[in-house]
Image (cartoon, rainbow, N blue to C red; front, side, top):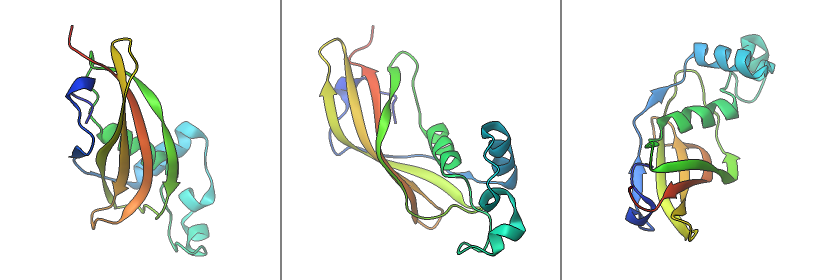
Length: 145
């Protein structure tokens, strides 16, 4: 998504990523890295007793995978600026394949050779069901050097 200079974006422009399947190894590795061993993510017997009836991916794992599906072009992207209005609206299970759909919702020229692109982001499962929504903001250079 973030492969063009700020001045090349238009409000309403859309983009869709490739997909990536969530594995048990992803969940275990994320738990190891983050220290989040909450049993809903890591204990199959515990998870069977929850409304989900099985383990679910950590919300922050879902966001990390979504970030990895985005395209950030060096020299164009100055920095990740932040996220707003984040909600996890459905669970992500082992075996779900996620992709990201984005729509540009705001362009803010900072007057210093950079601008912020704000995009509504939906992380979706293989059947089109949305699992997470947010507004992602990225600081970009306005022009090439």
